[in-house]
Image (cartoon, rainbow, N blue to C red):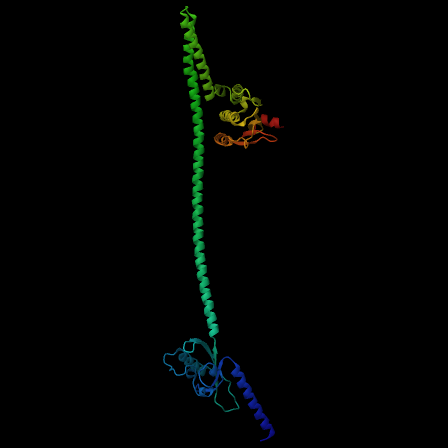
Length: 415
């Protein structure tokens, strides 16, 4: 043997050793199969997988190699190997499949491929079988699928909860909208009833005042006149004359009180002349009833300047404001202002008392029914009521503004 042949043989042996070391280091089971599907060569993974010793694995088919001691009947691995081997022999194309093998406890990825034929060497055609352990990949996929399913379940559950919460919210919105509409209707009905009550109250006061003046007052006047005629007739007993004089005086007092009651119920001046005259009359009467309280009247409008629809509201509002001053303000001076600006009628009562927030223990009264009545009356007649402490000092300012259509006179005054 020549030196060149020796070197070639040594190179071949070295290459063989290198190939064996390489395939033995791989994690996959690699086999060379003959035309019958028997193992010709195999790497040492067969030992690491605890299937066979390396030498005993030679000559076995893949199923026998992977399932030592088990037959092929009803074995999914045997069926898959047989189908892939048959397809490889017929078409020559690479064949691959994956399955979870319970006997090995592994997920396997099997690849079958034919080696290219050697035209020079007269050897039988061999095939390569690569069996990869993809258990970790399968476990990861299963874990990922489980996570996805759990996420889908959570999303579905959360979506259901959100849908239910949204439905509950819509129901609550609808309920509150219905309650708000009912409250608005109730408020409107209450305002209407209150307005009708005030109208009925004014009508009843007017009727009672007229009845007291026209009926009872006239009867009392007739009785007084009769008694005066008796007293002026022939002289009677002194005691009788004294009794008649007392009766006349008592009737006069009763007539005066009756006139006062009628005026308080509904002053005739309000219907006969107008709101401005009624305001002036009430200011004079108030000043007489409260002589220690200085009342200054600043009225710059005439009766014709106050619309008839506002006459009663202006008069009753002034009554309520001045009564509040007399009861709660502890004031020494009060100013009543009734004026008109372009498009507005203004009623204002200002006092120098303790103020609306410092009138303890009567603060609850000053912010109670009286002010509510003023607000309601102003609102019903298209006005706006504002009350607060007087700027720059102690006391209270109550003010009502009614919006009016601007007249030519207002426009000329504004110009």
